Image (cartoon, rainbow, N blue to C red):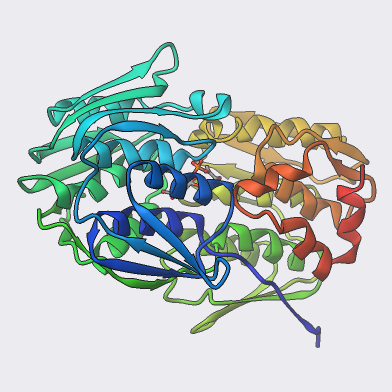
Length: 421
Ligand SMILES: O=C(O)C1=C[C@@H](OP(=O)(O)O)[C@@H](O)[C@H](O)C1
Ligand SMILES: C=C(OP(=O)(O)O)C(=O)O
């Protein structure tokens, strides 16, 4: 039997940033235990602080204490979102439910990501929300005088984050909000949103036709243990699969609210053994990958690069579908995976929303990370099996896991050569 390598995975970015916003809007003091501390969550926290929310740390950063303001921000302000899509999509509806003029901006990378469907939805609710051309993105200006609520459809075919932002603002509106995400991608994130809203005392319900209703009434403070990040865990599970070892992640179990835990099902198809227990998920690999399958990863697209990067090691081609929206993230992720696999001498084909990776023996290459944390982390896993894989920007992992290289290297010493320049 393999010794079990226990991975220390930091908290979920998606849970941390939702909980920060919900706690900020709540009545009373909330405690978030084991929050993720990374560029995205620190940016979110600082953005809220700029809007007048007091957030303190306890025991180092073991917990964050949020003094809720009992509603939406009431004085306007300028909000820096850094690289965080969640900040750019969750904070404008929150501000629109308040009062004042708010301007949102972020890095060049975030400015390139679309916000128009959100701005249009806020406009239909009666707020004034302007985005910058030609992208229809940041900088964004919201002139707020409270939101009435009402019936609404939002185009969620580019990102589910627009719908999450509107839903979280729902309890702060004067009347009920009923909203439908048209062409919704990344569906499990909406279930996470609803679960966390309920945790903070809101009423939200989904009908059979996909319409979601939120009632007014605000939020109540809560104490929350943040789960380890399932997207981050995917790199460690994939490492087990390709090295023939066993990796366990405590804190991630069958009651997880994170859809990305479903990545383990993909590894199972590729021949790994997966056990999802009450509180721990364990993956045992054989060191070989079974290919010859076609998988839709539209619900869990943050993990498609984890599969894409190791797919050349499989015994037959692997096709991933349903991932068109992955072109609109930190990088065009289909193009980034293709470019880097081709640099390793691997054959690929792709279309608007799919990619096929053929088996091969990867050659040494310097990976172009495109400032995308997930490209760096995914190709680090390939590096455990391919000598001479190096990253042009190892530090970009800080968006979601500043300690990634130390932790992967602690469990798999071969990783050291990937980060060496
Ligand atoms: O709601 C969230 O926390 C997220 C939703 C997903 O985005 P899309 O809905 O844009 O696919 C995901 O890729 C992102 O990392 C986090
Ligand atoms: C897409 C991502 O981030 P976000 O949209 O939250 O910036 C991600 O973390 O992979």
